[in-house]
Length: 593
Image (cartoon, rainbow, N blue to C red; front, side, top):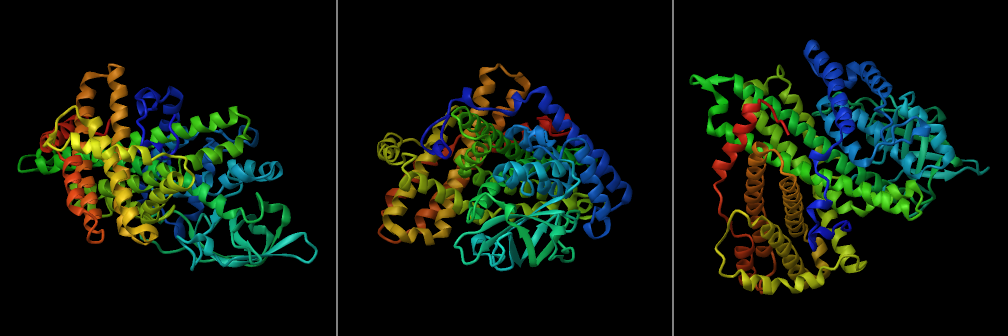
């Protein structure tokens, strides 16, 4: 198995990659159980009520939903069985995240309970802390929350001002500070709170019970979307926290926060794809039922364009999500087999794939925003009305590009982490592959276009462009490159397109080897070609923008020729491909993969 981030210089074998067609019956049963729960307990009651859930009006109902989901075992996904949980494999947990997305804002509520609210204890707690808190969180007797962000500390989380001071008798820390945007905060019993002890440089993490005292809960925020999730400010005024409630060790809080965010980022991506599938199915159903000019609007090319694009982006992104999730599981097993503590193995496996998690958070959330926007457009005026619920999904989706680290931060994180592993830690060799690029360029200098069947070469050349422009930029800008965020974000987008396209290609290669269903393979091959066509266009634009942004005298002429060759035209008809993809799903009347 490749190391995290190593995909940029090596090709993984399709036989080693997990694809969604390999889910077991048990895993699919969990997915279907969650979808049924959302349909029966959330969607249907909302339709009957005629409005969405709102934390300001329906807090008791939201809490009851959380408790009902716990009865089905859904609040203990990552908690060990000895503490009342299900202890699912990481990739299965991602499938849960996809399925729960059809619960709209409730997905945020249960997500905080099962992920950021409990994982710090799962991964970093002592045996005593786990025994005390995890059974009650798994049963939802206690609701969990995560308190990191402050009014002056968002993306720069380590600049938080919340303070913890050891009491004179040494038995407790006295906590003072303010936290904001705290999901589940309105009804939480337990908070994972990040604060600096005295004048420490780095944060520490604490398990804080509301009953400790000195905890004041603010009013529910009035938000654009996810109105059915509780979001409040939390104030700590001389809150006494027993010393045994320090998580891990002093100053380890920032590391804890980063690793929990790695988990949250890829889970958010899985949830985003769940939203894409749900929205696309609604769009297809409406388009086949809505008649204009004596035929369903699904017959029109403009609608097929949207459906074909949505399906392709969704299929491609999920290929990368579950490839990564399975790799995290494999890395965790590899570590435990070598004698690493099982909880340490979980955090190390997540850290190993931090680059991919950041890529997927950005890509998945932006595909979701594209899909829900086009869903609303297909619904037209009905989509803008509250009656159909599409506008609720549109508003709910917008937060995904902000939380778990903004997409801008995650773009820079993906690039920065890759460069750190390559140049500082020497874990990934980008130098030797970079030396081969000029010869590869010369061999393709007279190539005018890619033909069908050249998808592996397209991916390889995307990687070469990323390495070439990164190297040239580094040499020209030196240490100043860190301040050129526009350039870094362009490079990060090239990195992302390469990973998504390769993941999709590997999925298709594996399905080919399995002699997969012929009718499905036709549409899958078409989605592969359409994704390659679109990604090449994005890579071409990002590479050109990056080169044009370099200082004069950076040999832009040669570099532009490299872009012209490596990101050359892909000789397919995108309209024919989109229509073919759309026709398949329209005939099924839903997104059926």
